Image (cartoon, rainbow, N blue to C red; front, side, top):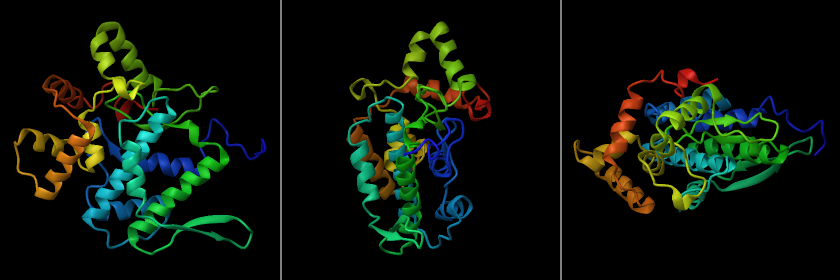
Length: 271
């Protein structure tokens, strides 16, 4: 790869922008998902990939969410963290529904495309093409996920030595720095360990694996509200796979954080 072809460390290429925006369709700090319905998912691809996607189902939406969180696990790996057990296997299983073929254009360039024509396969093939392009031009390692556990926002690491850990130094970076000074235990609990063996699965991990909101996971765990049986079964399966143990103290702490969306490290505080 020539110097001319190398992406600038200051400006992410279009493939990275698409992938970053794809992963950031959920804001875990406030448990807000842009994809609340299959229609929302189709609208996102229409806006960000100029792809007309219709007739998506609830199952398609759940699968797209699994792919999104699986990619977030890979972006955490780019930031130096080991993934939780089965995270990569789950991502591969989710992507396995998209059989790809390679086609060549008139100028000799190769393009990956879905071998079938279902709406979801066409949509996810665009994401996979973007991943392939990012690997090809060398930009992929600079796409990371924030090391703050309650954030995990996807970001472009423009640092010279690719050593960035936070989506924003003014937001999450500064927040963790202050916490380390004032509340070391809280700071440690809100920074993702680099070793998977030292990580304790959280509500975010379960929600991402099951393709649901944190509120839905909480409803299943507490039994406070009825949850449809297919969704409940999926959440319970994710809890078992990840070995999740509810932590009431951590849940109360998270509730206090989400009640203050303008706190350092929130979406409003990001660069």
